Image 1 (cartoon, rainbow, N blue to C red):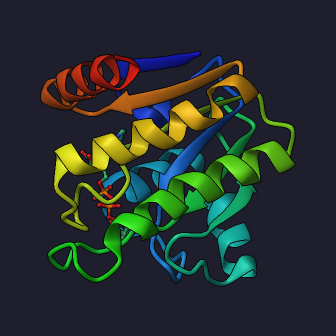
Image 2: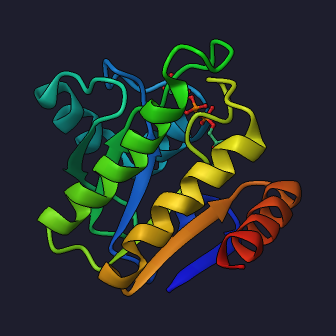
Length: 167
Ligand code: AR6
C-alpha cells in the first residue's frame, strides 16, 4: 500500500523505518537530515561515522536512536545541476537502493521524505514522479510505503501524481 501524509518524518510511528536525505559524508547537515539527527540523538551519528560515507544514489542503514521506528536508511540524492548530469538516474537509484536495503533487512514498512528537493534543488514535480514511480515498482513487497510530505503543496503534488501514475 502506498500512503501519502502531511507531517514531520521525525515524528513518524507505526512504521519500521524512515529514510534520511543525507550527504555523501554522512556528517549531518540541515533540512530533514539535521532534524532526524537532532531527534534521534547522538548514537545514530556515531553509527554514521563508523560507516563513513555513502556515494550518491546508494543507501546505508543504522538503528534509529530515540525515534519511534526501528531503522533509519540514509540515502544520498543528487545535487541538481540542470538535469543533464545524470540526476534523474541518481535520484531513481537513491529510491531503488533504499528499497533494496529495506528488503535486505526484512523491513515491511518505510517512510520517505522528498529526497533532493530541498537544499539539493531538484525540481519538485520531476522528483515526485521518480519517487512514486519507483515506489509503485516495490508496492507489492511492502505492507506500507509512506511518503511524508513537509508542506501542503507537496502533499497535493504527491496525491495528483500518484493518481495520474495509477491511471
Ligand atoms: N520531515 C519531512 N520532510 C522534511 C523535514 C521533516 N522534518 N524537514 C525537511 N523536509 P532537504 P536534500 C523536506 O534539504 O534536498 C542536508 O543538509 C524538505 O521540505 O532536507 O536531499 C543534508 O545533509 C524537502 O522537501 O534534503 C544534505 O547535505 C525534503 O525534505 C542536503 O541537505 C528534502 O530537503 C540534502 O539535501
